Image (tube, rainbow, N blue to C red):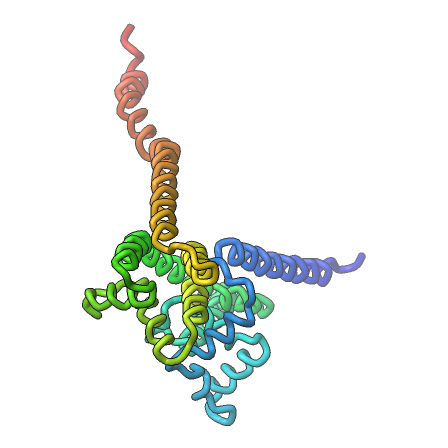
Length: 305
């Protein structure tokens, strides 16, 4: 009778590989589902990420003949084409000093090593080192979360900014001068993410970009659909010569209406969401308080009637 040991081991490794591939596929699907919307042409977005005004490539300091970490970084960038992807994520996070694109790459490497190492130490099985592949993509969720938080901060002040622009344009200024006038009345240390992005638009126009290109770059940097529609509205008004004031007022009113509808929808969902803590925490406590005296009397000698 043959020994079933090798067959069981082969089956186990096969199931392990299937589970790993399924985990990566599930993570990729969830990342794409909850990722912030792109701008359509990824090549344009990649060019913008790598050619932002006043910036250079974050990976230019890597030495192909340097340390082991530098060579590993360059290998991953070349094989997986991560340079443009990380630059895009960093750009949509607002280009913070920390993490830089290189820090983001190191964070992905750390998670890969941690996942693979913990899986191996916990089981002693070498094939489980492949779980490092899952850990390599985990930081993308962190980066996408920061992007969503930034986009929400931008949208929080956007309707007010549109109203101020409409008021300033109605006073006789064009839209670019209106943006500049609004920014002059806000101290640099008190400017929000939206106002910082508008300041970049002004700087790009002063450096020689056309107004159309500067506005389109604004839409690509933020990745917010409302700002993309706003930019299209201004460009269309420029091309057709229509009144921009009424368009901006109607657009701001429409955004406020949609925000109100969203708030009402969330308020309507609150009652349903409250059922979960009620069933888990409140109802068991109430049942214990109501039934505990009865159960005590039953255990000690009957119900008494």
